Amino acid sequence: MTAPLPADLQNVSLRFPGAANLALEKVSLSLQAGEVLTILGPSGCGKTTLLRLIAGLVQPESGSVRVFGAAPRPGEKSAIVFQNFRLLPWLTVEGNVGFPLAALSAAERARRVADVLATVGLSRFAQSFPRELSGGMQQRVALARALAADPQILLMDEPFASLDAQSRELMQAEVARLAQSRSGRSVVFVTHSVDEALVLGDRVVLMSPRPGRIAKCLDLPFRGSAEARRNHPDFSLLRGELWAALREMVLSDPQSDFHGRGFDESTE
Ligand SMILES: Nc1ncnc2c1ncn2[C@@H]1O[C@H](COP(=O)(O)OP(=O)(O)OP(=O)(O)O)[C@@H](O)[C@H]1O
Image 1 (cartoon, helix red, strand yellow):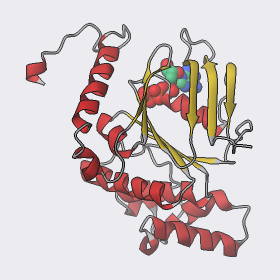
Image 2 (cartoon, helix red, strand yellow; image 1 turned 120 degrees about the vertical axis):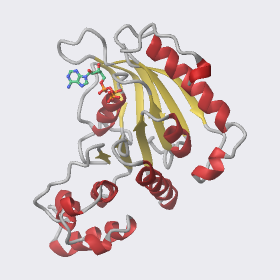
Image 3 (cartoon, helix red, strand yellow; image 1 turned 180 degrees about the horizontal axis):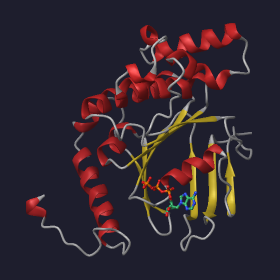
């Protein structure tokens, strides 16, 4: 018997109460063990909703969502890292990271917290408060908190969007390292950045809005470091292809601020 997939969505449709459009329409997607799936698409195409379905935080109207062969339950197999960190300001780094581990004994909790803080390079800051840390470090704490529960699926919702360019690159390298270091853990990474999707993903899923659908799924022909990927002969080609598809979606979407506007390629 083959092992159940980390996540398997079949023909999933979902409409939020009162909404004119389906947030997702007939989305089918499978997540393999150990893979990094990057999800790219314009605002409102349902990227976050897709993550929330896998996390068991929302239910499909029709179709099925299975996580390791069962209906997903929040906090069971997956953990989410958000764009805005969501740290508790009155707790230290150690307190924040250990927060979801309340059910464990104090000794086991301390061991796990020390472990994940070492993984993200923050052992020296265990007693600091979030306000004493840079944005990049706060996002490392959020990542450590997600890893503390040892989830089999790490769901990342534009986690580096509010970081400066340098911190973002360092954090991307961190995620790439994590993805490679523990075989079996899968990552679903939502981003608005074509570059980030290509630098981190094994596969890139491009979504289109209103209703949210999967427009394209690319199996990337490169792996490894950001530098190795950028030097691959197909990198620019895929980057151009994804950009063109995104631009077309945004320009043809009546609800987009850019609807109907033409861009002169030479001035970009
Ligand atoms: N709780 C909710 N109630 C009502 N509508 C919602 C809710 N959450 C999302 N939506 C709507 O569902 C659609 C998909 O939203 P979602 O947040 O998944 O998109 P997204 O691709 O993640 O967008 P962004 O890139 O702007 O974060 C949007 O039209 C959004 O307005």
